Length: 287
Image 1 (cartoon, helix red, strand yellow):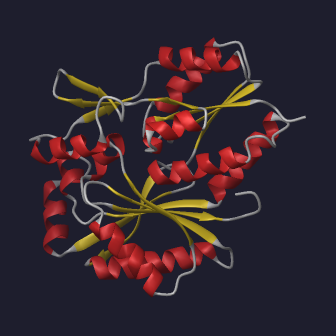
Image 2 (spheres, rainbow, N blue to C red):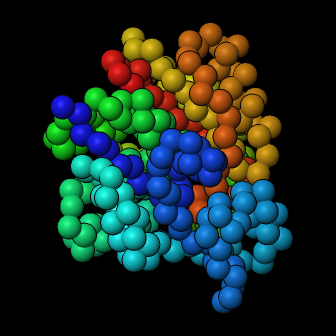
């Protein structure tokens, strides 16, 4: 007999608010902070469009913070009134304290709650959530749910190309000299989230055309002989992401197209307005 499964995610899945309402998913928002007094709940009090307008005019990049434990407790208690078990999916603990907040809340609530990270963010996390939703009525045990999510994590990969290192430098994540040299030489860092949930270098390319070719090669290698679904993302403007999608089509790559989506404020804080992001999902049975 199938379990009644309640679903909770955080705001870094970057899906429209109506998506959560239509699919009976509870979303708990992270915060974006500009200065001492401007604190916004992501997607609820600050849209992606407004965020990027603020970002490019701000002398300092904003900071972000995880949701309070109490917000998770409230959502969990509400869902457990009508569900047998809750699956709470979040961005990796290596990137945010959100997982910790969710885990602490789960310990305070009397009920079956599975807290897992997606080993991804934004469109990568969204691909995993959508596959879980597709199979929501088939799970008969907690172990089956955990196994399914683990399989999804093994078959999903999130890649990105950063046209500029300006925002990594402004955020103190690399030195100014290193950013200046890379920009002068037109190096484009290629990044991915590894199996431990860590943002790691995949390589670097001189110019966007070479970056596109290198990412194409990685996608082809990751796909192997499996059919794949690709979800594309941009921060402020979609132009480079649209060019990359066209490049893949013209290069003859076969894939199911899950569309182009906008990266939200929290993830955009650390990437800046110009990133090209791609989530690959190998389409195993049921995905």
